[in-house]
Image 1 (cartoon, rainbow, N blue to C red):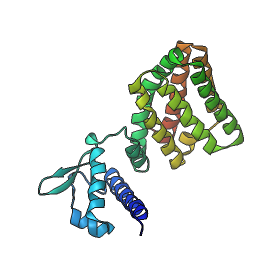
Image 2 (image 1 turned 30 degrees about the horizontal axis):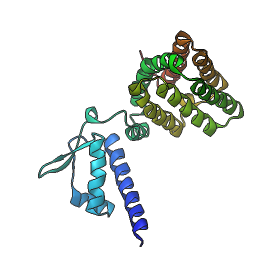
Image 3 (image 1 turned 135 degrees about the vertical axis):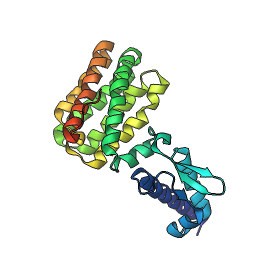
Image 4 (image 1 turned 180 degrees about the horizontal axis):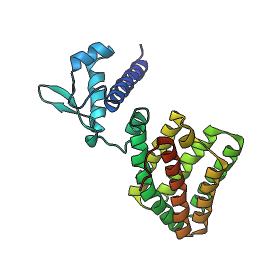
Length: 244
């Protein structure tokens, strides 16, 4: 086997171990306080210790595990996890925590994205405004034709551009979180949450036009309406209480 193929295979094994263990921690099969022993993991996954150590380092960087001297690696509670990390968002989105995570992130989006829209209306260059409008118009066309993949990609581009274009690097960093959430919703194939409709696309276009015109107050209002509509869909689906 060539060195390139060997390295590629090792990366694949490492990714598989990370995904399996991360999934099991999120869905509770590996309970808080569980000890991950290298010998046991080596037998289970049939991989080298170097692959296992690297996988555990990734999980440690996500706040999911912590090495304990002379004991092994211990599973940590959710309060320690990097809940904004796209990988954890995807794992939680495939787990029984789907609705909990949706509520948490919708509450955050409702508080953050209208502010980002207001800032973007003030800060956007003409090229940035055109890019957001183009994404919204792509969503309108995709909704009309029933092209879910094109709709999703334009939706990701739209929200990422608004958040990153706010001129606030902290807000811009949230774009990867929103992208992971949008892709998780699509993966789940949940009707109300993933439904792409002409009405939803038009809300995005209204927001894009408000930003392009430089109307900060209208941009804030349109963004609030857009996220609040998603909140209402979530409440209808989950039977939960609205995010406030």
